[in-house]
Amino acid sequence: MIPELIRVPLDGDAYPYKHPEDCPWKENDALHRPWCRGIVGHTCNAAWGLHQHRPKVGMGGKNPAARIVAIICPAMSQAVDNHYAIDNGKHYRDEVSGNRYRIYEHLTKRAPRLLLDKPIPD
Image 1: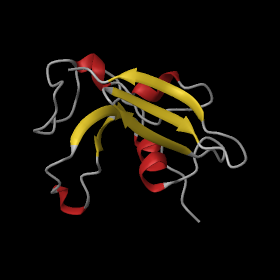
Image 2 (image 1 turned 90 degrees about the horizontal axis):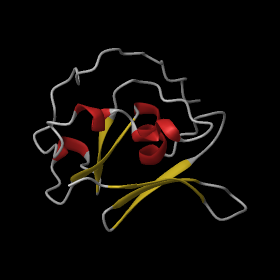
Image 3 (image 1 turned 30 degrees about the horizontal axis):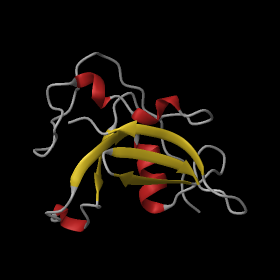
């Protein structure tokens, strides 16, 4: 059984953490709010998001092809990277298509439902 994630609220207007070296949006704190906040039925578990890499960085953080494509909350990151069920048993997946980042609700007996379709900023 996977333990419930602890929800830790954070306040403030400035990004409170050190940006990864490869963050293309270091000067834009507003982009570091989780993009998944607008998904109906999803509860973000942090005020500030994680940098989502695609392809995955992997163990040790050594994948030269990886780039930051989105900012999502820790719970959504666990869901799309490790197939954890969140939000009362929902499963999510993400994809990068061109310069767009998308999150889908993965449904077992139907086609996936698109929940987020956002351009990746330059």
